[in-house]
Image 1 (cartoon, rainbow, N blue to C red):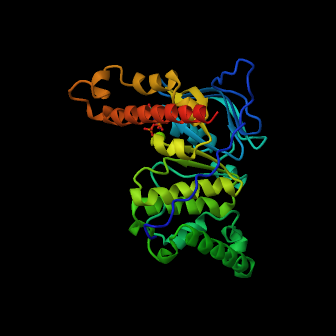
Image 2 (cartoon, helix red, strand yellow; image 1 turned 90 degrees about the vertical axis):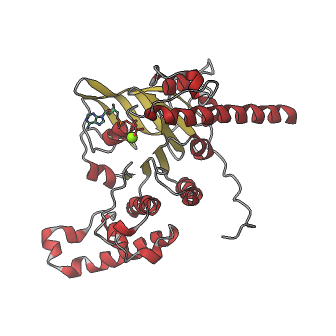
Image 3 (cartoon, rainbow, N blue to C red; image 1 turned 180 degrees about the horizontal axis):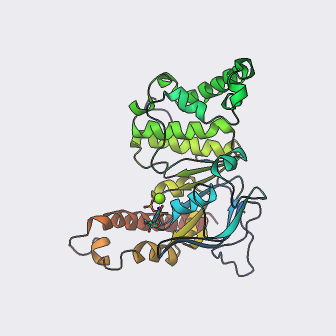
Length: 332
Ligand SMILES: Nc1ncnc2c1ncn2[C@@H]1O[C@H](COP(=O)(O)OP(=O)(O)OP(=O)(O)O)[C@@H](O)[C@H]1O
Ligand SMILES: [Mg+2]
């Protein structure tokens, strides 16, 4: 791409996603106008630790929802529960109006709900194209009788291959179709995982930290791919630590801390919610806030380094919001 190409115009955010309370406040668990996922009373306990404790949560259909929260908040565990990769201690949830509790992962995927993993799961010793074909739904050749009668599956195989190639081209991985997935970069593996998820024409795509380990040069293209999913009519739920990315593409943000949903709302308002700042800082009560904000010099424990970035990002986000609000005031 040459440098003089203008950046794409920002795409409009989806608004009017939640049912408005007469108080005007948005409380955690707020009802949505058209929810695609509804979670009720879901808990997951590991030993003595309650990793997930979600009273009520609705994910809006046709929008991009970001699930944020400090490390260990329970985001991945909630993903595992909703997608049938793990079983909750209590609770129920529905997807597209159908009860999903107790439904294993492969069936949830058939119903139109797919996910990617925080640590990519592409199979290194398969080629890129073979990895893609694993994402195809209901493969006739997998059944014993069908597998020994090739005429039953050859047509389908061709169809899937064509679709795989089309998706690989969209994700600019077509030149790599014969390469082993192990030879791809971290970012390319993320793209492959996302492309593979689309093989089954999902209605809900769940992405766990799609940006983690992605080279900055690939970031914009990954963001565009996620925005494309919405334009194609899919619902997206993604976990992300990068606040700029969240602000840029999310229509709605759900904040988790210590297993619970502590805040939700459109990105611009949720970032200013004191519960969110508490959630991030609460996990590090022993850390000197002066050091985090840069007012005092001092040593931070390694695991709290991320806080500095988060604090700066929150700060910037709040500043940008303030500027934005001043500008729109001026317009009036
Ligand atoms: N299989 C497991 N066995 C025991 N504890 C677990 C297991 N999986 C997760 N946990 C614990 O549950 C809590 C929530 O973990 P989870 O991975 O869901 O957090 P997360 O929000 O995804 O964090 P991160 O942002 O670091 O990915 C953590 O305290 C974690 O140590
Ligand atoms: Mg996680």
